[in-house]
Image (cartoon, rainbow, N blue to C red; front, side, top):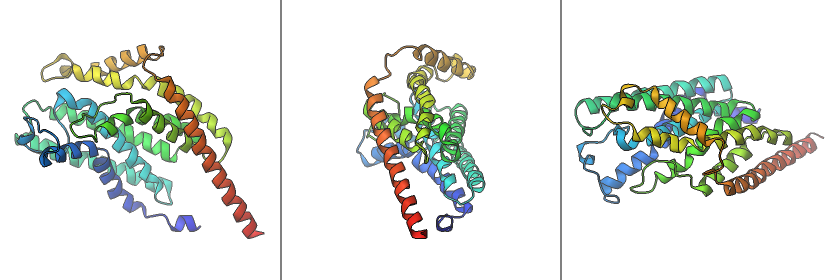
Length: 297
């Protein structure tokens, strides 16, 4: 009862999820602009053309847009746990995220239409990519927040794989692009592993299929880079956006059956870290239940 009383209203989730999607998800983009304005990082030739809420330059921003929109969607989906009612929280998180995507995309489109953006900007294509990645991230966040423990790991698989690209994007002058940094991947994987457990040790087995998905999706970074290399105004891939899905599929399918690039050392660190987090959570819950039973005795 006390926990429910401390929950916030679902109405608050609407603005919170919208803010979280853009401010937290696109934090690397916002910081890079600040770095250029403040002189910390060298400004590009197009930087003086004006600031867009979303990066629209296709040659080096496709991967970054996918990563940031997806991470933002994940964080926005997690806000659905804040209210006492899971259904109301999910509805508010969905509405807030879609509102943020529409508002941010609309503002970017309007600014680009006024020719304040770079000459090689591709507003329509980048808005489609932003919306699709944001919705995928939102679905993952909702499932990771409200779904059963066995599916939470699956929902966290793709965000975990792309997280190191988001982290590297915080460094001045560094693009938002997955680099397979093993220790960042291991830490993220371990945290996701530990948080996927609710109250029963048997739920640790629910991470096994997720580990397999993470193994496969570690090829997502190279696949996105392969798509990015083939996108420019007037390219065949730009004329047929659906072919991008074929490139991603081919890259991931070929990488799923080989061990190269999967960083086996990270798995050992991840499993140890995840087991420690899960054990700590389970022991703490057991202690709290024991204290509650004694209080009622």
